[in-house]
Image (cartoon, one colour):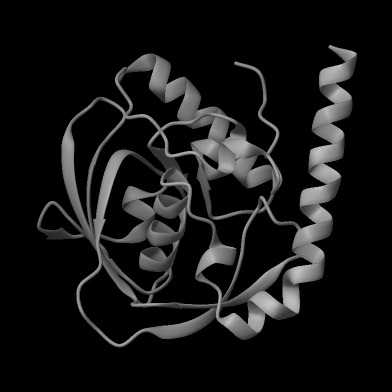
Length: 192
C-alpha cells in the first residue's frame, strides 16, 4: 500500500462524516499499518482515516499514559500491552463530569494549537481489525485522544471544540491554512 499524506485543513474530506468500515481482516490490517506509519512519521499519537483522505469510521492511536490504566473488555491493561490500536466503527460515550482544559493540536493543522475542554473519561465501543467487538474504558490522555479522533470520523474538528478565546487567537492561521490548501487542491485538479 502506498504511503499516506496527511490532509491539511481545507480538504473537504475532513468535514465529511465517515462511512462505516465493512471489510475486516488483512485488507484493514494493511490500511491500519499504513495509517500508523503516517501517524508516527508526523510524530502524532492518533490519526483518523479522513486525515489521510479516506471517509471511513476508522482511527488508529498509540497512546502511552502511565497515569491511567485503560480497561479493555472489563480487564485493566497496561498501555504497552494494547498499543497501538485500530478502532473501527467506534461509538464514544463521555460520562458526565467536569471538563478540564488542555492545549490540543492536530496533524491536519500544522502549527495550530488551542485550548479544548473535554471530560477526561470515555467509554468506546468499537470493532478491531478482525471485526471483533470490544469495549474500552479510558481516562486522561487516551480519553482525549479517543474523543479527538472520533470527532474526525464525524466531520468535527478540534477547532470546533476550542475555547472561543483560542478560536479568535488562531483564526488568522486557520484561514491561511484553508486558503493555501484550497489553492493547492485547485492547482492539482488543473494538472490532472
